[in-house]
Amino acid sequence: MHLTISMRILGLLLMLFSSTLLVPMGFALLDDDHTITSFASALGLTFLAGLLLWLPVQHVRHELRIRDGFLVTSLFWTVLGIAGSLPFILTEGLQLSPMDAIFESISGLTTTGATVITGLDDLPRSILIYRQLLQWLGGIGIIVIAVAVLPMLGIGGMQLYRAEIPGPTKDRKLTPRIAETAKALFFVYLALTVVCAGAYWAAGMSGFDAVAHSFSTVAIGGFSTHDASMGYFDNNSILLICSLFMVISGLNFGLHFLSWRRRSLNGYRQDSESRFFLGVLLVGIAITCSYLILSDVLTVEDSLIHGLFMTISITTTSGFATQDFSAWPTFLPVMLIMFSFMGGCVGSTAGGMKSVRLMLIAKQGIRELKQLVHPKAVIPLKIGRHRVEATVVSAVWSFFAVYMFVFVTMMLALLGTGLDFTTAFSAVAACLNNLGPGLGEVAANYAGISDVAKGLLCLAMLLGRLEIFTLLVLFTPMFWRL
Image (cartoon, rainbow, N blue to C red):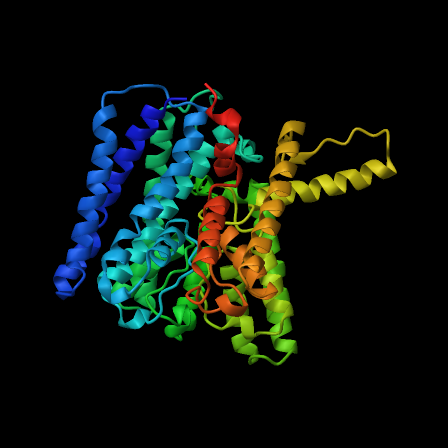
């Protein structure tokens, strides 16, 4: 492992990240608000930190290997999450503590969407666009890491897509093809953002809101410029547009790229994970809408619209809201949070365990039942036309076990801080799955919980976004042995 190359990459990332603060600075200048000094100071501090990391190792050249990949991937969100909190800390009007600021920043970059800020409608546009930009940048970072890097690292079955998606294929080092992959995926991501913003604007959003919400929609982040989230607009067309783009963003961006390059939608139809994801989503929508209608919670029209929207939003881990779903009959919010454990597809901006893993676990369960009936039969486990190796199945089961262990441990830790069971359960699920909204005390926002609880949830957000193993492996002694 080469720490110098990790320092060099991290320094470059910090300097690059500092340049994104020019966007909110532009809004601060246009609106002549009080945030220009905060953003300028944050830009200077972030750039300086990156420069100090980069200068001593600027001439270092080493091949980036697997262990370097783990370290760089983990540091990417951890360090940028802390650096991203500077504008929140330095803006006096927000009155956020350092822990609150770090929570908001990490929530943005991991596209979780949990917030500690209230009164969004009265905040300066510079702060609002900065929050949305954090999610948009986190979203493209997630896609590139998930499609180009994690399959190489073999994180819990991610190597299933090593041959299927346009990423590197060598096993020992991270190749220059990552740059090509990142470029292709960025253009797909940018195109989807532009189309989404145009659709929002055509449906009645202001130009600012359209761009801001397109950032968090394509990133499946859930941050909004209004306290009422998508419910603020009271426009069914906007909700349907948002639902469509949440589903698109929940699919594998590698498939989006291949479909665009081949000018064909056959890739989606032939992809087992996409079919599984859309099938589960349809089942969830049918149950939610039917239950809302039968329980007389909403009118039939509202049940269909809000049931569709909220199911897609929670399942894909977007976290947008049109209704206080925590006030619905208990069955629905708990069911929807359970759906969020699936999240979206591999290589998407969604959180959760990913559809392919749950699909593989389900297929393995069915295979075991068949094996009981026919003990001597040789029953291969396949995804599509590809046979799944035993090592991949083992990795997926290991991932599932560790994911559940982390979930239970985090929930017990939150209960230890004094939170009630509903709040602790939903808060950990919402942060570990990168969902955002929870139940109980965190149904509206996370401002009311303690700093210790917020710190634990920051760790949960990072663990969920980094696919658990990527971060946990750094705490093993063998990782640091030469």
